[in-house]
Amino acid sequence: VYIITSSNHELSPPRARPWHPHPHTPNSHTFDVSKEDGTTWVTLDVQYLNYTLNAAGAKADGVVVFDAETGVVRNTADGAGWYDTPATSGTLAMDETSTIYKIQHGSWDGAGDSGAAFEQWHQNGVLRWTGRDGVSYMAITHYAHHEAVIMLDPWVYPTVEGGGEVVQRFGSPGIYNATGGVTGYHHFGLDESTFFFDAVHNVHYNPSSTTEKLLGQETLTLYVNQVYYESGTIIHPETDFSFVAEFVINPQRQQDMDGPITDAVFDTDYTLAQLSFISTQQGGARNIGNGVYISSTGIASTAINQPGRLDGMEVVDIDGGHISVDYGTPNSFYDSFIRVVVEE
Image (cartoon, rainbow, N blue to C red; front, side):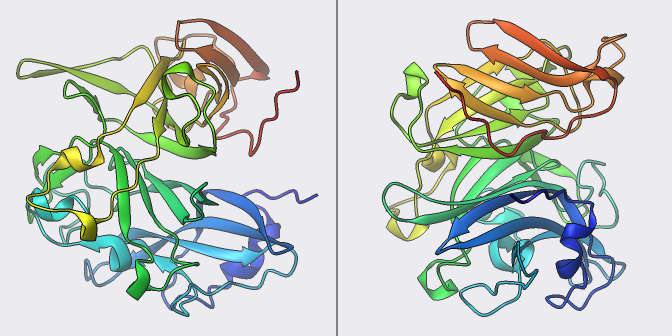
């Protein structure tokens, strides 16, 4: 049994940073634990200062994998000690087409003109798994880019075989100009009138969904802090509720595409379950039944429209049912579980 948090001394070996020369490279947000060939591996979000993006050091993201028993860092298939998100899967391009299969980054100062481009992009979820087709994937989530990104696992495939290549995105990341101003938004996988504008957190893999609309398909669940709906040219925030999204994994490699590429390349089926609260930060969710999910509450107790609310977890279904399980405290619950098994 391994008891690991992203802030305790169990994670001290990779914090020595043998995999990266820059200072200020802390563990960031969350981690995943998996077993491969008898070894238990921890996959960990990290944040670092990128001096290529900005001379002052732009906050950027990466992933480290290490042995839970020994703390020894596992190299990627290319022999690198870590996965560098902007260097491997990013682009400095500013047009819509170039930022579909690449995650846009920029050299602007601070949060940019929009104020939205802080931390590129506040990576807050990570997961590695092998699909039913035998292909290995890694997924990450971005707070400030409002999306989940799936790529071919760079610890399994070298770059020449697609390691780190984006194969699916789900959410609505912004499109930025040279000074960090927003010029538009992508719309990956979502209905045209729905936007994830505030934040998303954490992903969880389900090899065979029990949700009727997605039945039997491989899915990821995603905590959505806030949803916006578009009516004409006006975008309306849903200010009272957070959501759980479950979407079908539908990888599409760019090398297999013919003709012009648009956001529609990542179209997929999904469901949204409305929680009884809103948490603008933190949160995590898992599918546990037919349209039923269990979710942590993040920092729901701090929302001004929820006086007296206690944090913990909530069971929710897509028909609007809710069962709250509070912990008797207003302390935040980021993603308060790694794995949930429902016994009959």
